[in-house]
Length: 343
Image 1 (cartoon, rainbow, N blue to C red):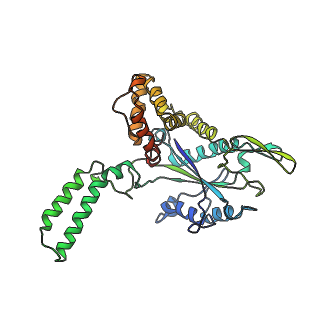
Image 2: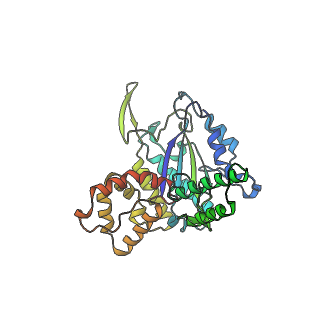
């Protein structure tokens, strides 16, 4: 499971409204018949229109300053192993969304009218998407890039010959292009993987747009708070503040496993991902101590995620070379974020 929380982008090139983000989430509905459209939904409603989402999010921003985000975006990307547990991608992911939004609300160290925050205090809208496209940061695109560059240069040469600017054999050059297309290390359905190409397989994931303000438009609820849990004095009263991301991410995994009967490998856990980024030496040491079957699955997950790998499983601390792990740590964020698997 890979979950991200991002604040609304603000600035000269971004709208103060939710309209740009909502329209972006409508991209998969273009050209579909009415019965095929994926609608927005929330905790209690289905088939909510994009127009209503924009109206509700934009109208729930009382007392927020121009430079403050009006909403947050949560993206929930199950791994292919998790998606295999689902019977109906859309309906199961809707069910899951409604449960983890309870986990989201419970992760706030806040009270409203003396009561802990619940999902009924959260104004959110969610949408299921089923497609993903290769980005420039994906491992497949990056490793195919040298071939893409050579192909582009040869195509420029072919065009020059066809325009009569230089002499040459275009047929020979076109054969060279065909060979390079086949030699590129990453292929999908017999074609070189390029940026913008749709990814094959089950790519279902969830986008959630959450208002910065609660449903009453009175209280600001920021999952971007740097505090997990603390108290501050405001107007002579002690007020709780903070949001515990670790708790939210960990509970989201537990919720999925409990709801869909998924047995989670260590390499799939949020705890593992944090360990890799903070202490890769400890991470691989923990992997090496897993039972044989679990260890094999863990390394398969790591390979498929695009994370850099060491050549063999370490068996002693002496083999965990600091230089190697520094190199791994440098590239891990890009590898994990660009992967459709996520760990």
